[in-house]
Length: 322
Ligand code: ADP
Ligand code: MG
Image 1 (cartoon, rainbow, N blue to C red):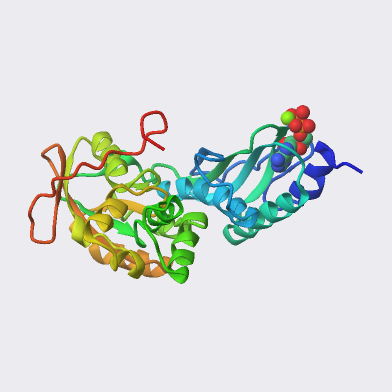
Image 2: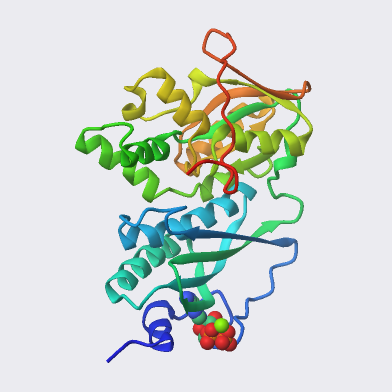
């Protein structure tokens, strides 16, 4: 017998909740009031087939990624994940897809202690929209507006692999099988840096998660903070795979590649040891990539301090070529 909307919700997206007061099944979910001194952090991210993911992605990875990109926004604010909702449009009920998708989604949800409390399900072109809710102590959220002249700029993990994978899919780069698998994993299964964001509260002055490319996302931080910066393109952390490719491609992928979901953050030099301790506590590498200055604008230099000429515009869904 055909699986209907409500069977589908019951079968794939209904699980008992522990933190929330009421989960899937009624007109609203009910979340417990936050403890005194905490603020609610809320963020939504939508994934559209052909735009945010390729039809070749395994459903399990897609479920992971849909939640990961949302958790990444909570991470960038230093918030602790609590609950999320899922609005899902899909052309038809495909149980193999749903099983894989829900498996990837709940594996990450369980790992991060976040609960699915509601959503909406409809027929339509494949489209996934998640809204996450998190908690952060009042006044301690890491904001884009917090960078100050004199701060150091840091980034977590490595940059550029997701972009490299996209280029390989497009056929503009050819990679050996194992290298392709490795960068494809970075594109399809990003790791949200939730523990790092939390550990950076009170240590970093500001943060953003890198979804649209380093240069563009750093531009948002600089504009919001009313400052400028110098970035060392040769200091940008990259994987062994990307590091073995031509230098211009490395710069393109690390500076302008999107979908990294690493944290970019600023901190005063006096906090350097605290930054390193926070990274160690979170179990992720961090790298110093530049510094914030009072002079507006972004200056990109190479390891010898010479200016790089290329332009690296931010990805824009309405303006960038796809
Ligand atoms: P309503 O018509 O009142 O909006 P729905 O019939 O759309 O309610 O949904 C029934 C219940 O299932 C609600 O609790 C809703 O939050 C939940 N729900 C619907 N789709 C999803 C989904 N994809 N994931 C989780 N919960 C969902
Ligand atoms: Mg509804």
